[in-house]
Image (tube, rainbow, N blue to C red; front, side, top):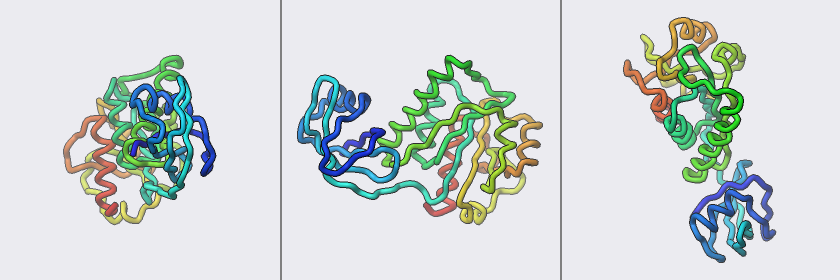
Length: 239
């Protein structure tokens, strides 16, 4: 059954008009018909089975007919911090990170970050990246939308204090014990830019409590590291 995100409160047996994006996708892209059933979610948990009641030129009306308290969110919140990556590779990192259960995305700028967006460009890209995440949630079944936060300087990010397990994507001398991943309820995972972290940045991260986390001694691409390391976390936790 097709899934659609719409940021509004639904009530059973109450006909509602869907927003512009969902309405356009249903009527113009998929060309669905009245009577077709769909799944709706609003990012607050759970999902609704709904029936299409009418399709107009710009608006689609649906009737929620069943609520399901389905929550596919992993038991451990993994907050992913990553640099802005060139072109479609950024979309890939966000899409796959969402599919693999990231709880949020914090963009960071490092000394070797190759993409630096000014105010106008950033204002355009952030909504696009958030839509990439929403589309990934529609596809993978996530009912809570991870937020994409505007970029922070790496130094500012590292200064944030929290009690989470802090990991940085960098091959280390000693592999991280699986028990550390299994016991964590909150993880902050920091991955690097195309050129990698500088020695100073690695030292600052270590002094801020970040522990090296990598798949062996291999160096992963900037867009590959986020989903690969997320997958490794879930495998270690048995999720």
